[in-house]
Structure formats: C-alpha cells, structure tokens
Length: 232
Image (cartoon, rainbow, N blue to C red):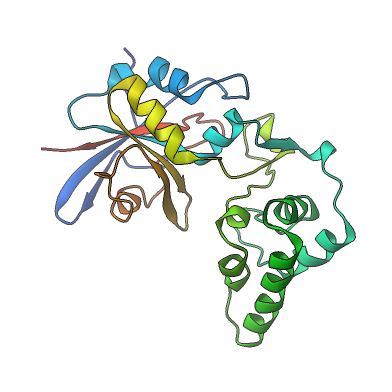
C-alpha cells in the first residue's frame, strides 16, 4: 500500500480550534464518464481509511463521472453569453463565467431571466466598487461552473465542467460502499463548500475550515479525493 503524502506546496496537517487534522490526498486514474464514484473510492481510498476518517471528494471529479464535462467544441455561445461575460470579475484563480462558453452553459443551467438580473445587480455593484454580486444572484449552479485552463488535466483542459448533480446521493452511495463517512466538496484557493454529505453528523460549516488551503490537486497531481483524519 503506497504511502499518502501532501501535494507539492501543501501541508498534510492543519490546526483548527486547537485540534490537529491530517488531510491525505489520494491519487487516482483520470476519472471520466465511464466511472462510478463509489467504485473509484473503493479502489483507491478504502484501503487507506481507518477509525473515524472522512473521505472528501472533489465536486469536479463527481461532475466528470456524471457526463457534466462539456467539450468546448460542442458549445456555441449566443450573443447574450458574449455580452454577459463582460460583467464577470476575472479572478486570478480561475476563469469562472468570464468567457462566452462558460457563460453560455450558465444560461442553460440557470435560465436567462436570472442571469440578466445577476448582470444588472453586478453593474450596480461596480458603481459601489463591490465585487461578487453577480454570483450571489446567479446562485451556486452558476458559481460551480469551471472553465478550461492550461493547467487542468486533459481532456478537461478543453472542457467546461458543470456542478455535480445530487451530491448528497453520491456521498451516501459512496459511504455505503466503503463503510466510512463521505463529503463532496468544492474547495479552491479562495473558498470552500460542502456540497454533499453522507449523513447529518458531518458539519458543513466546520469541514471547509479543515480544507481551507485546498490540499487536493487535479492537474499533474491527479488527486481528486482525500482523507480527513483527526490526530489524537
């Protein structure tokens, strides 16, 4: 059994509220629509888990297994998408809805009226030098859309990846398979959210703090899941 270690530039441990936790990233094959998340977790994670461990899985990994990764070649942005993407703040941590292709998918996911209202509110926010209002109005289905970047693992460097469907169900099914608690997470260098949890004992507010420095890696690291372990 291979030893689990931190990704480059990341730490294995973190201290939260006076307790120390390990975050152990797990390398897998490139997850595609041919895979089922419970199968992947059983193959790569189960043998490493013990006691009260929690398995955390990237939402992007789950989405890719659900055929929620759409090749750029299949997306044909309408004029409205090309217009609305101009209102989105261009974050240094990702594309978001800042290109026509991702905005087009947001229009399909969220509906045109909501996206138009988000753009209107965003324009008002800019008058007051406030950022992020677009996503607050558009909602998580828009915020969860990932655009293609050069450092994204192929073939997803040429895809738009949507948020996962029914992450609570995926977490429950995976937990039933491996016998440990599971959460589906959306973590990056700015924020973290728990999208799905296998049971109510999992604290959706606390766990993002344990993962706040984003210990996973889905480019060359190829680690879309990991283990949270409290150090006794």
